Length: 340
Image (tube, one colour):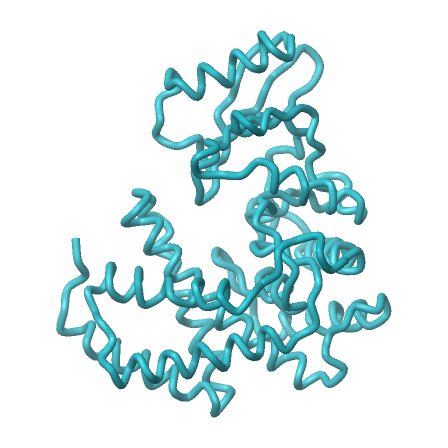
């Protein structure tokens, strides 16, 4: 969940948050510790009480929807996944009081813990979440949403960050790539999708893992969360280890009746193409975080995502146009400086 951000702890929302905890809920708060925020407008604080701690979320209603968090938290917990319990809520004011899943994320734990055990736990939790899937409970990952996500790449990374506009020919090639990626995504079986199932959003705790940052969950492609987990924004894995984890996931998914592709090669193709869609989206989001929200640190991770995109696209002739587009943009970038 990150830092509490640069806003001073005397701002109006912080004062409102303290009043809610003390005056409305009657808690004897010893201290409020600023903790993680994610790539959003939310802030989090650890509430120190006499004998325990909990987490309070500050989610400005103009920008965030607490109701979605409450709904998805309930679905996760009903599925047997260790998500925070909502202890108190004031959604109209954008305030939630949650159980505390601890201080250590997977990103921290991988440095000193058995990584295979960590990821086995993460895949088992993902499978429980997917097994519980029911249509109509979450918004669908629609064609329009997938396209809007892909549009973040030319709009924010190319145009805003690099100052590059696609030519008419490049736009045609880009739309052809988008159509193929979207068709592949919508052609997969649908399950519950966390949408950011990665090491920063998994907490090392008991039961393991704790799952956070799930309020944008949807009903969509079955490969989305597993590719998010294994091709992460902040850590990469060698191909042999990734392949071993994918065999484990696919085998367990079949046993549990999760509708992954029956053919192993088709499963990998769907996963690769889903990953390309996600990674192009995230590159665009990282640029937007920099220029719209003043969070420049995320842009440093874009080379990792370009690596994922190029590696996946190179395996499929149908995505050759994407490689050609990226090569052409790279050549043009060499002659231009990024916009300030």
